[in-house]
Length: 586
Image (cartoon, rainbow, N blue to C red; front, side, top):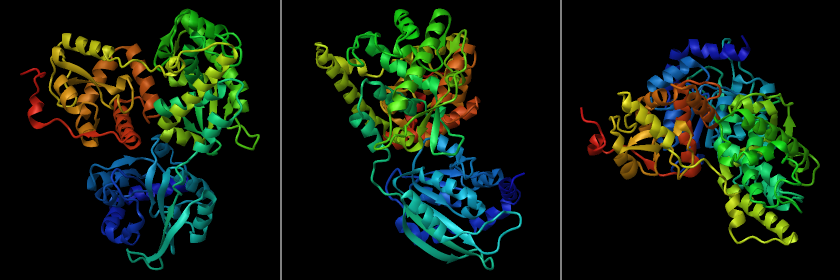
């Protein structure tokens, strides 16, 4: 057992005693001297790392924050759930905070109370970087430093304000306040320093780099835009496919098969329409990626909308897809990866990692399958910018792509009517199609188990059944199976409409949702494969294919949509409507 594991085990064993001590102190009294520096306003999001019993997280909830509580000791999490029901808990630890980063959230406030002394000196630079990358521009980081006698069961190392100030300078944070305080539990010789730091609110993140790629870089083709758009689309719709680089650099690895897939989705409609992607180009001729595989996709009538996670290809369609993905990978590595560089430097922004593995036979677009083409290494700041600001990047990128195409066409003596090029550049999402979910609901009803409205819990007649996007299409267009639920037409069209269910409403719908998922998507292999391919790409569940994990992932995704899109919330079915006119009377 490592020193860190022994420390966590000590908190597990002593959870009840530690909790009693922590809860004997008032969070308001502890944090009052720093309260004026904490971000204010509705909808603020806070992360409490090493949340212990949840005392401070619950206090932040009382201040109006949405809170994520990260705690590695199971005993402490259990005490926290008992004392402070309703908190969102994550089993995670420094220095990596892997599970927290997988959520794809950024925070107005990150609190690290009574944790820093447990980190060995060699772990601290990495831990600090991980904390800083979770902050929003203008976000605040609060760290408490303990000095004095340690505890033989819990490894403790010396801390200093100078160390924190040095790390802050490296990462561009300003020290707002450092406050020395005695130990509130009266332990002899123990003293604390609370440090408040802020990330500058320049609002840019990696936007200057993106602007340089989109607007300033020399371009002999549209390939740089194609790569950036592919990565941006993955950050929006399938962020859970990205994993931190193993070398602990601030980079993430995205399956190259997924990058190539989104590349094909971008280029298929453009090439089919004969829109030039380089000087002198028309159709597939002259495009490095448009080899036999790509041309076979065109000949077979495979569209961009067909190339989505969970889809299965066999025979000539599978052969064409595998060949096209390989062609796209080779072109991506040879051209945009090689020539997309940092300003005034020769270093590439993107890097290819790993060698491809041969893929044969029928192909189902699952996360594991897409790793067969290796990975694309993406800088962490760029990835986080696309996660948080992708909706703002997309219009600029598309506008520049249309300008390039129009310029190539003019030099070839060709002209396009206004809006035609932009129309072909519209990303071909799967249609807002609820037909499969409706068909499955009908089958269940015919089998004697009619679906229930997940929001009211009441059985439904098929003539009054709607299929609802739980996370509304207007806020985040997602037709994945995990996001489609049976609902009363009255509730869906007249109450919930295009609003996001509140955290409480979603929690109350847990059992109906789990029942629907199991009945609808767990009965046939093809449906199950598609469900889990889509869920594992969009939800932060890793390799866990349990429906409980999927529901937890749905809750996290709801929080991210709320934070990123600021969607209006729905607070639930009104009393009289719980016996809506679509219910089956008993």
